[in-house]
Image (cartoon, rainbow, N blue to C red; front, side, top):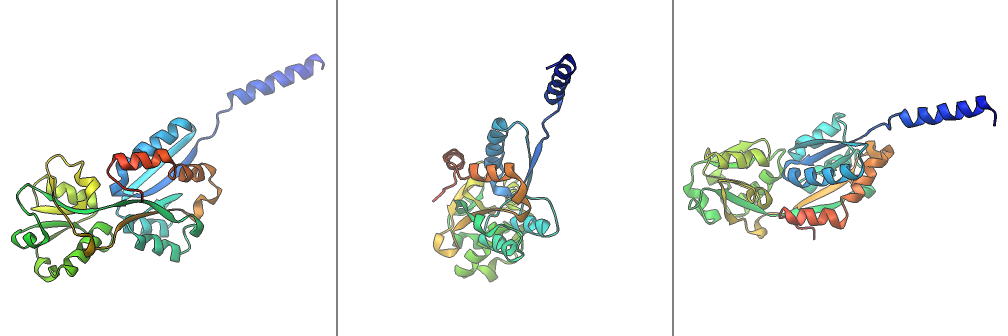
Length: 247
């Protein structure tokens, strides 16, 4: 190898070393009630994959599904009910073979201690917060519970609608309502509001969080890797820490 060739090889090596590794984006559209879990899991993953940038979008499942339908970037979608996952499945916007259950939760009523201890006690209250049933699964679960308990007509003028389950909890925290229907995992993180009672499971479907890769994620290897990580024992341990169940 002559001097010129050696110099060329050396320069090529320096060029390769100085060329930055392109960062890869992973777009997440996730139900608001999973915020702390996904923040921790995405931080753990990014620590092991420093060239990955996690872009997180939290909100009501219905609103997220509509955003994806309208072209919003999303590699992974995690809903707080089966309905909105089925909606995107029907639109052929998620990879069908990737759909699976990520976690489970429980619906509770949270507020100032002493306000209520059962569904029947709701009749004595003036303002009750729920997530808007048209887009917020927690609100839809609550409405089903009201109907099965025979309280829907009596409560309809007491309801205060919230944009997502976190906003619902915020109303209870601020004392703007007598209480709010939220997930157990949200209520456990509240500073002021306390769990007043757990909604009987026979009154509503089990709170299920389905997860899937979107069609957009097909060519994003990092998104697929994170999706796989979300099924790991480490991910299940984080879910358990925040009060979710995985079976």
